[in-house]
Amino acid sequence: MSRRAVAWLIGLGLFAGLLWPLFGPLGGTVASPIIVARVHKDFQPRNGKLFVLVIGNDARAGNPDAARADAIHIVGVNTKTNRGGILNFPRDSWVSIPGSGEGRINEALYRGGPELLVRTLEAITGIRLDYWVMTGFEGFQGIVEGLDGVGLRVQRDLYDPTGSGAQIDGGYQNLGPKDSLAYVRTRHNFPNGDIDRTTNQGRFLLAMLRKLRREVTRSPASLLRWIVVLRRHTRLDISPQEIFRLGVLATQISAGDVGNETVPVTIGSVGAASVVFISPGANSIYARFERTATL
Amino acid sequence: MTPSTAPAGKSLIALAGVLFVAIVGFGAAAYMSGLRSAPEAPKSGGGPPGTEEEESPHPKVAAGAHSIPQAPWKLDIFPVGGGPETSEKQRKRLRAQKPRLRDLVRTTYNDVFLEPASRSKAVRSLFSARSAGTWLASSAGLKPTVEDVRTVRRRASIGILVGHANRAAAKVVVGAKGDHGNRRFHVLHRSTLWLERAGKTWTVIGFDIDQRPVT
Image (cartoon, rainbow over all chains, first blue to last red; front, side, top):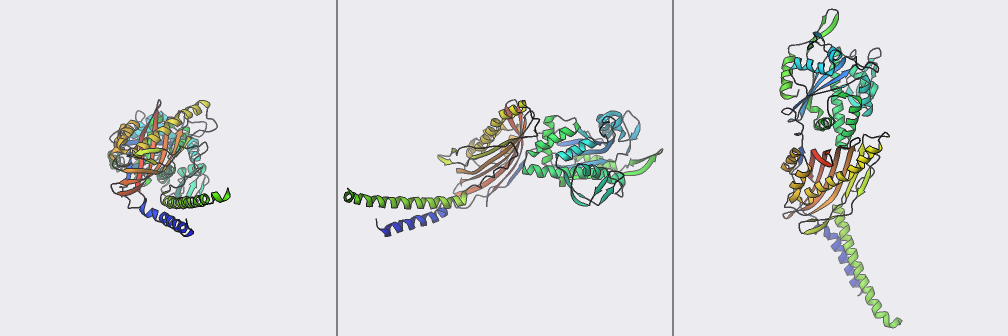
């Protein structure tokens, strides 16, 4: 074989090699439809609506059973629409406590535990609550620590050294355990005091939801870590299987689709006690929330 | 001896030249083809501590009448929620579940992508009834009419809850190319599977899918 023939063959080979992609795997791709499917049908307790009572009590170490409810929220989820709502109750709301006369709503926990607080809220709102979950100061800080902090936008500089202990700059912050607790307890820095504090607690729950979704998008197994943290630092009436399914459900709901409302109240007093009275206007909120599980 | 072997030596050189050219040609072709379709190099070391990383040999799974080399499975299976206090019993449970989860993921996605005609059977046997219904009602995976399917990426990351090892979450990514009619397609499928175990059986109780063409 002559050198020229060899050169030709090499050239031909290289040429064929270069052209191969044009005749090989090229061609138009079939435009498959974009599919984003989600499943949540397996956990629909009642017509696609789910209500969970979230309780933050004021128990420090040493008196876990003699606690009052500092934070009271009904979290609603509509599994058909993947929307939800957080309905917040100021702790000083003066209400009728079933079988226990009248009192501040936070006393229901002290008088009869989470079950009595559930009954109290069911009587007030007409909403049947499916689950409750409760934590105290230590538990709350344990949760935040276990989650490596929770990021949210703090509306203003908070400085409340004698009350909640808050010393937090305004703007987006990744709050650690102590600052998180201070944030959800602070009321002196806000014009509407306890009402703003109650709303901020709802904002904090939404910040946690945002964080959960972000982490699960990156790694679904993060949900398992959240469950471990939650179970370690809370008391709840939810079975492990239900926690997992509720967690899955939470990952499918965008924080932007969850409303955060505090029941309307008027300020007043009963005897020497400063309390708030839930306004009659709250009834329409209850009805809407019960009907749609969204706010 | 040397003169008598000279002609034979020349023909050997010519033969070697031809072989060289052929090798260069095919090499160039394979290289250029690979540039267009090579799967992304799997990220390594992305899993948390305790990650078990495996790579199965390149399986040749029949798609239609052809035997086509498929991308190797890259599976990370790792415990979640454990720690130094994890007991030997818990570790034993985890070890027992790893192969089951691995098989579930492989079976599901092999059927969905490489044996689309039988995907219904696989999904119904491995998913909860409602999840299976939703999956099958969607267009997830490939149509039974596709041909010459070649997976270019198959990766799964599976976390198992330490304790009873009865909850797990998996993130699965599959890239696939093939023919549909007289057109080529290339899709990237990403899904999250939520899994529960009862006894020895794992069931997918929920999922998220994002599947779209690669442009």
